[in-house]
Length: 106
Length: 342
Image 1 (cartoon, chains in turn brown, purple):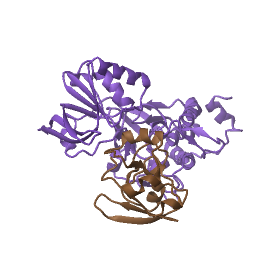
Image 2 (cartoon, rainbow over the protein chains, first blue to last red):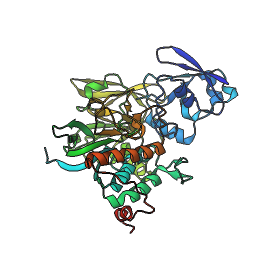
Image 3 (cartoon, each protein chain N blue to C red):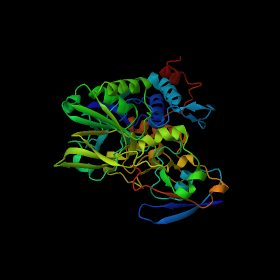
Image 4 (cartoon, rainbow over the protein chains, first blue to last red):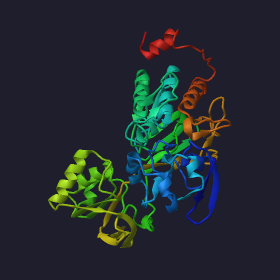
């Protein structure tokens, strides 16, 4: 089990349990975290599960894959720490992960 | 308004469930017109994941969205469905004689016995970047699609994005714009390499500019844009003068006009019964991802099942009092005749 904290644009935080092997997006959807739309259901095909990984976790979540980099072209306000949460797989090493949800996915 | 097209069923949405509905209705001699906002069949399978594998279609261990669509198109060919692409259904009302009048944004009007909503996650519409104040400029200086190229002649055009739409419109509009700037967040494109090459040649020849960055704000008056404020990749802000901005950030799904047809809705889904998949309005059915009922699974195979049961009830609307004989395609010569295999 890994605790994942989603920080909304207005600062409210929601910490949920993530299962290793699941994606951060699936965990958000399962726990009805607002702001993670995930239109395509996790196929890395819509860029509506965009999150900002808190800087201290960037090293652990790893780099964007090429498909994800392409899809981020369809996200808004992309920053250095932008990721598509469907592409971050939860592992025990991500216990405590903190990600920010953008104000709007679109 | 053009003359109404009379048909048995109007199917809203040409995704897998809408297409398979043509098959199930066709076996019962129910003629269909299919309307979709996209320019081709397939729905999400075509727009979101044409090349991605699907593993849970019975008897197809793996199939891509594009293959599934083309197989369904082949399967329904004997029933000769009429497609109306690039149309969004805007209105649907019950007439005094019990028929439905269905209208599209393209001005097409249908008169049908029944309406089958197979609209999936809703209609695909261009994503609107959440830039503060953008609403004030929409359709005057900010355009999410190009209907008539001439309206952009002589303008200082700013195209935002790095996909095929952004590149295609860059190449199409460059000859008639007064100036053209392409803005993208990186010097890499998810577009046809040939288009990217042509764009780079235009930049090298000084015929257009390419800038790296993302729009953060807009400047202008009375709906007329004068400049877009951009944050460059080095963090510094600068303005790009423009009176016509075209953001291309792909498509997203919105429920759209269906919400206004007086149907009961539950969190943007349409509740149906599980015997006929009929909505709160008799004669309007909802199948596939757009419906909800206890135990609903948003799977393509659920939509196929829903299509088959829906068709049984539609038969009764079309042929009141007539008994429907249940038949198998394997053994029924009449069904095989309809399929053109006998």
